[in-house]
Structure formats: C-alpha cells, structure tokens
Image (cartoon, rainbow, N blue to C red; front, side):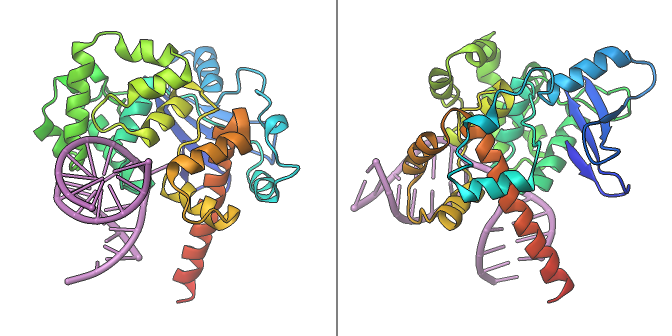
Length: 273
DNA sequence: CCCCAGGTGAAAC
DNA sequence: GTTTCACATGGG
C-alpha cells in the first residue's frame, strides 16, 4: 500500500499477484472505498482486498495480547497508529521484495520493484505490471536484473530463482512449516538472513510471532527502551519475552512510530534549516 | 567527498 | 560467539 499525496482524502494503491486496487478512507473511520479498473469482478476483488488487509478474519487479539498497559512506549505507538494492519502479501512476492530491500530506502525499494515488474512482469488491467513469478525470474539473467538497478542484490535474486526452479514446490512447503523451521529453511536461500526470513514470514505468511530487527527497530529499541549495545540475538530474546505471540504487530507499530517521527523531523529541518 | 539506506556472507579475530 | 568489510546505487 503506497500513499498518494494528491487528494485531500488519504488514498493508497495496492498491487499483489494479479490484483491492483485503489483504496480511500472517506471519513474518519469504519469504512474503506475500493476503486477497481473496468471489467473485473467487483465481488471477487473486494474479498481478495479484505484478505490482503487481513480484514477477512476476526482480529487475532493483537491488542489484548500486547503489554501496552505496562509499556508506555508501546501504548503511545499504538495510539499514534490505531487500526494498523499487517498486510497478507503473497509469500513469493514478499520474499522477492525484501531481497530487494538490503541497504535501500523504502521509496527506492519501491522504484526497483516497479522496474522489475515493468521489465519482466505481466501487464495488469490498470496499465501497471505485476511482479514476475519466481519461475519467470529464473529465466531472466543476472545481467538483465542488474539493469533494474538491483546492484549486488541481482546475484542473490538470480541464485534464489535458480534454487527455486531446481526445487519445485519448495516455497509452498516452507510457507506451511512451523515458524521456527520455516525461519531456518528460508535462510538457506542465498541473500536471505534472519531479517529477510522474518519479514517474509510476517508479511507473507501471517506469522505474527516473529520480530524482524532492522536498523530502524534496532535504533528504536536503543532509544525508546534503553537497550543500548544489545546484539540482535539479545534483542530477539527481549522481544519474544516482552511482546509475546504478537511481537510482529508490535514491531510494525513501533516501526511506523519511529519512522513518522523521523519524517516529521526531516520535514521540519527542510522548512527551517 | 562525505554519509546513510527495512542486510548478508565471508573472513578474521 | 562477535567484528569488519565488500557489495551497487541513489540521495542528502
């Protein structure tokens, strides 16, 4: 879901698999407008969209499980982003997008994925392009991928694609494994370490218990929780003990919180240097 | 010319 | 077990 800045009403464009929808939040709460291209089944796209937003099932009790009553940091972050959703993205697409993400900014990751989609993906009804399947990616050379500004990530993606082509059904099996096993299996892929494995499981398989540690969350844990000098392994242990079975939801809320404060600081600095 | 960005792998303590 | 570095590319 990518914010558009033009309208007064917050609007978002989302693309996954062969779906492309635009969402609006017309009033303050409790409704979402979904606009679709001509000539597709509104009912099917609507239910697919609700699935994508994890609005198709009753809330898994994120808020009840999380320790916001005893944790003012989390409480404040939750208050700043009420109703935040964890997207249910396709497993393979999630893996691909996070393979593009290493030491890149989110807006640049977006551009890179867009270029790969345009160069190698199938056209969608609204004029944009879907991300290519891993099968397609396996037939694309590393050089061609580098032309989409993937840089050194092109080799990881090409090697992943080759592995997946040689192991039919592997991704699907991994997505169904228990989380601890799936985490280890994903890290067998070239270019996939703890962070990308965790993001793939959180956003691509709904494993709310994982807690991906990136530079932003690491900083947030240092600054907001006073955990300076803690290694990633220690932070994992802390997160598991402190946030419990919905740690991934807490991670996203804290991530959104620290990023919004950072964006506000950057905007203020531009206005008043 | 410097720094950093939703990291990972290899090599060296 | 941690620490260090290269890896491409774009933007402040």
